[in-house]
Length: 327
Image (cartoon, rainbow, N blue to C red; front, side, top):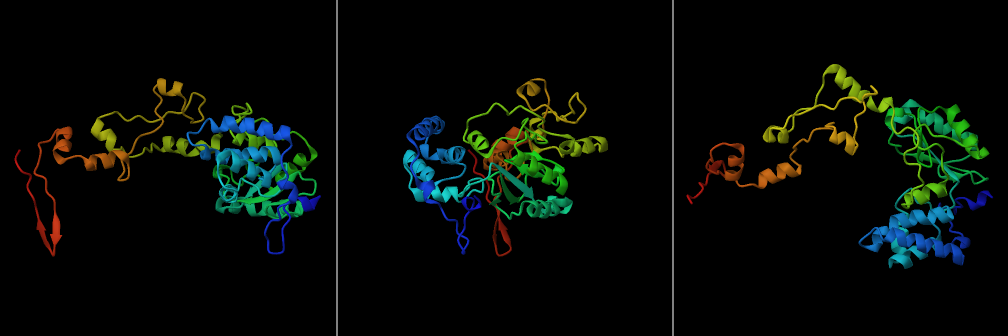
């Protein structure tokens, strides 16, 4: 069965099986078209629905098949080349059969020095797989990942994009064996179980599975910086907008639970919880708007007398000034 997963030619190019180009059964295609219609209804231009439709293809086939590309092109009035160009650009889209669980080991800088390289070597040897290869039973596809966006829990392993924090070679080997055995596996954070690749692909296509609020969303490691800043009395510099608007600056307080978290919900905003401070930088919209205002308007807004507008040009080393005409 191994030949069905990621078959490559000697030059390294993937061989697309003829099976992946066979038309969908009528009932499968009908369901796909019905789901696709729901996705298209969210966008003013239907071509914008290509990304979720490719995830929808993976939720049906387990990877982006030739027939999936043809159907997406037909539905969205695109060429198959346009669809293929997108499908081959993003790493979440698989162009050959993918395992039921994609296990991604982060080997980027922080995870690597915290043990990510050792984890990769151990699990790669244990499974007999290299990058983007799949076990013969079709259960596990192993990947080296460039940052799992969870550096505060390094080294991190993801399974179908769910977090497994503070991993070791031993814990990762246990993880893949539990997944292969069919056991219910619960990630460190997130839903109460790891869903299959097809199930997750349907969620990414825009069809919620009701698990968004399950489990823990954050942990103490993510808030260490905030706690340390409060202990040391550190605050961010006051922004330009705060000085000009005269608005008071408040510092976000930890939640009642004492973990340093702040309430970002609408209810939290109604209670007066301040999540941060707006800074005016040279690239900000406020800064650009002020720069575009006439000098007299800026002076009036600041409560200071209007001054002569001076534009300086340099010709050689001699500055020239131009006075504003009296109205």
